[in-house]
Image (cartoon, rainbow, N blue to C red; front, side, top):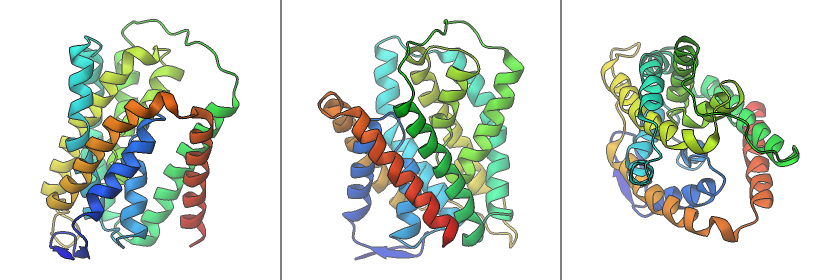
Length: 267
C-alpha cells in the first residue's frame, strides 16, 4: 500500500495504472474518454470525491491524449483553427467550472447528483446511437459561426471541468449535430482542445481559492499513474477495435453508465 498525500487515500501502487488501462481500453473502442468512468472509480472504489478528485481526473487527459493528437497531426487531420476556437471558449468556462466545483459542488452529495446527470446523458446518447438507423454524415468542411461556437465551448468547458473530463466528448455531438461538421474532420481538433482546456482547468483548480482559502490542486502522482495506464489502454483499445462487435460493446457501456447514474441518484 502507498499513501497519496494530496488526495489522502491509501491504495496499491499498481491499482491506478491498471484502472486507467482497463477503462481507456474499452472506452477508446467506442470513441469516449476513459476519464468518464475514472471519476466513478475514484468515488466508489477509492472513496475520493472532493474537488481534488476532479482536478486529478484532468491529469489523466494530459498524459493519455498527446499520443493521439500527435497521430492526427502526422496524418494531417488536425484542424488547428477549430481546436484553438474551442479552447478560446473553453478556457474561461474551465475557470468558471473550477470555481463552481470548489464553492458549490464540493460536498459529495451534490457532486454525486451532478455526476449522475452527466453519466445519464452520455449513456442515453450512446444508447440512441446504437438504436437509431445508421446514416452517413452530411456535414461539410467549413468554418462554423464564431460566436455560437465560443458560447458552446464555454458551456462545455465549465461542465467538463466540474466533472474532470475536459469536455471533448460533449463537443463532438454539438459540432456534428448543430454545426453540421463531419466526424472525421473534428476528432483531432476536439482532442487537442480537450488537452488544452484541461491545462486551463488545472490552473483554475490550482490557483483559485476555495471557501476556506485552500486550493484544489490535483494529486499529480495519482493522476499520472492513471494517465500512464490510460495511454497504454487507449493504444491497445484502438488496435483491438475492429475485432470487437461495436453494437454489443456500446450497449454494455451504456448499461454501465446508466446503472451508475441511477446508483448515484438514489444513494
